Amino acid sequence: MVKAYTQEHIYKHPWERVTSASWRKFADPENKRTLSHILEVDTLNHKLDPLSGKLYTTRALTVHAPGPWFVRKIIGQDICHCVESTVVDAQSKSMQLTTRNVSLKKYIEVEEKIRYEPHPDNPTGWTVCRQETSIRIKPLSALASMAEKVELRCAEKFMQNSVKGREVMERICKYLEAESRGISL
Amino acid sequence: MGFGKKEKKRSSDSQSTSPCAQLRTAYHNCFNRWYSEKFVKGQWDKEECVSEWQKYRACLSEHLDDKHLSRFLQAEGGVDLVSPADLRNPVDGSATGVSS
Image (cartoon, rainbow over all chains, first blue to last red; front, side, top):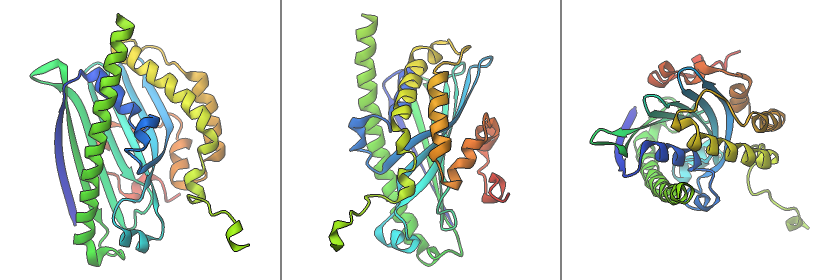
């Protein structure tokens, strides 16, 4: 029982700015209200390869458990830890984020992959974001009997949150654009 | 007096890293600046924010008691956690090192 969803979005901002915004997405206090399902973001690990220009980062996201109230009732907790692994290749200009839940795994596995790359039609000005979400209910879990419904509601929630995430990204990009104009005169 | 006892807003493990909030902000601010002003502009040869990172990390290792998360912290420089191969192949529970 796996459900997968793909979304694509084009940011009319250069890759450098969009990926900078991605790092700030959860941290900005102003966005905390919009992305209120994210409670904490901690960097657990990071490594820079100074020769190839690759940056590897592992962050922990503490999230309000996704899904409807009856799911929370079954699993008995309302927070969920996710681990986000990021690889940024500054040379080829690609950023790839993979987020998976590490708690509640006996019930459900959610994996979200996001990739930011320069848009082929305007590589220096635009960025394309491809997002792939897969949701899998464990077959023998307490959720299995209502898997269809749970997956659907989870997916709805994810879609809502990724729309909010895009709004936040656009806002930070605008802010960074203004900032860079101010600095570079 | 039943209501006198203040209910914690969140369960304790969600707050486990909040004592590090200040150090976290210092590190993230430094990282964000380095990322947008140096790393993406081709200056990736030198690691920065090292002292901010060390202070923040020391705090995390003291306060991060969630076992799911602390194993990621222990794997210092664990590039294999985030290697491109890992990104392509979803890791199942048995392969993530929980067993030990």
